[in-house]
Length: 103
Image (cartoon, rainbow, N blue to C red; front, side, top):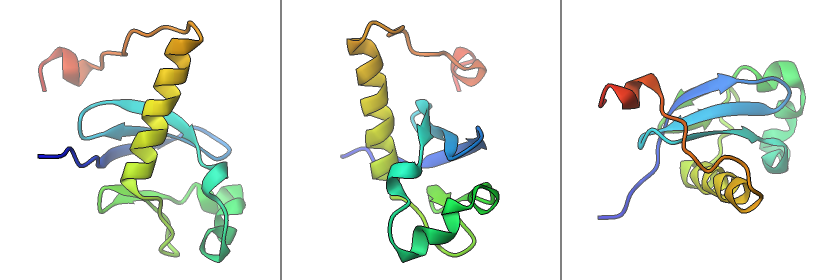
């Protein structure tokens, strides 16, 4: 069976950045600017509208129906973690309280 990533939590970090937590408890803060192309994403270029996101259907969604596929977000989060490891940043995954308690 193939893993299907799903966003279970999203926290606004300012600008166009959102801290995502996935259903495998991995997480990363991603800058969404690279995905803000095309007519449906035009309203999201306003930071006050961008901040109105919510989690629905396993991904980050906005009131106008715009979203980014959870697989795309998960791949970007994994790539960000891999880049950090290659460049000598802490390769140690952050253990959240939920993980520490075995949830």
